[in-house]
Image (tube, rainbow, N blue to C red; front, side, top):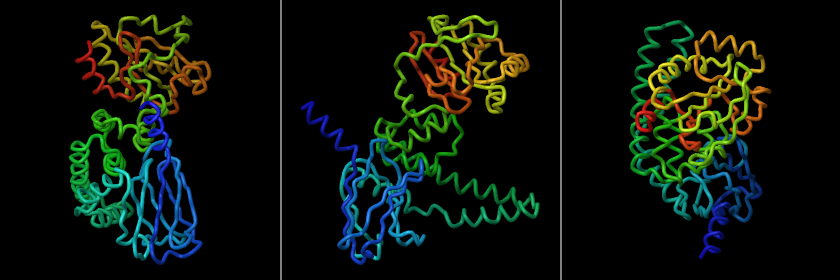
Length: 362
């Protein structure tokens, strides 16, 4: 049974595509383009169809599949793909009225099409309003711009609600990652992270969600798997030249805060962290701020200007510092909550969400 399970996992690393569509131009190239991460694979039309094997080790995502490179939208389609099997059969032209069958994700995508994408999402109306907003901006018509912005926000709000309702009803359908990216990607960080917390493992393990989490947290996707595990060891110097390690905070809940003096969002976040720190420090909460400044004088000046009273340390080589590499940090600000036992409790958290977490934890 263990061997069979292992073989099944390996099988899901690949997507086998078999397409037979009447009228496809012989020898034309078929492209499989994943917009996130800009990955492209291709095969050729042969004998009225095409077959392809795509590497899906990174997880599922939305792809655009199109025939030829002429840019004609009618020659392509878009759909969610992941490891498994996909069969496409149709009479053409191209993907019009084609039948898609195969693994479960194919049916899940059809469900999203029926429940969400085929609804009247007012896409054309939104596009028209956005064009009018651009014109109003160019001519400086602020009243018109304000009115148009309100209309666009209302229509997009309806789309967002529809997407949220669907994801909440199907939290572990991997194809729901498309809705997270297409309609919920611009949610405020704390709202987006709250949505991710509700997702099941099938969705969280898609390439789409891992990619989005990287953009939102500033940490690489493989580090997300460390939630619940021991935090990497830390040994850095504080602003007094004293060595700081995680053992210094034994028994406390710690916010590990990666920042820099030149990072505007980091500096804007500091006043909020000060309020949270003052409220919870007596209950066993601490902050360890790790600056990735290469100029230590600018770091120390920022600490003084922002009136930061908790432990401040600095990496010795900015973004190339050992601590930044150990925690897979590639963008700022990045935050991690470490529990009393030294395990990673949460990755990527806003001050507002941090306060809610501390209310439950301390």
